[in-house]
Image (tube, rainbow, N blue to C red; front, side, top):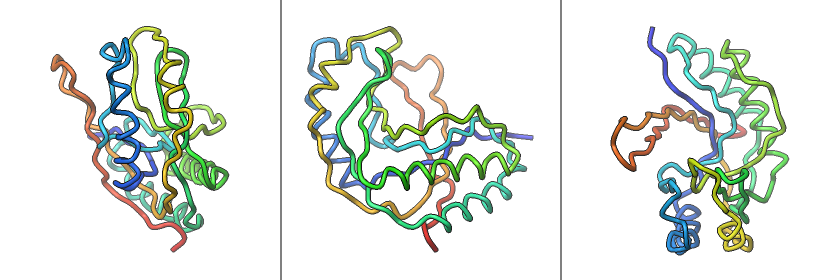
Length: 190
């Protein structure tokens, strides 16, 4: 029985990604930026539920339950907004717009996974974030957060829920990052 590393996400449209990339690129020249592992734009997303290793036999039930979660959630406006950090380990961009709907969609995605038989970690309040960089050691991320604090992305409409496979990086290859592949998606509100 093989398993896939999966998560459920909202994927920003290319225009929103490029707008954020233009704001993030100058940060790579700040002091200490070379010590951070910057995520690539193809991997930028808002994770709703991290599922971990999922047995392939659970995919049909997961598919049906995520389709239902998407169907029960209407499309909603969102934009990339500001920045924050998780201690000195992760730099992220935030979100604004219909955050309550995004949080509801995250709760529904987690419930769908649990009902499909996927063990999920303890429920905690959803915090919308798009990871920009990580550090193996505690880093002072405050200058990066301050540089992006006023970032206001152009709003877009979230119209689908995506199930994404995470292909882990090749061990021993410097700078190698996980590759993400959307394996299913469902329109919202249909």
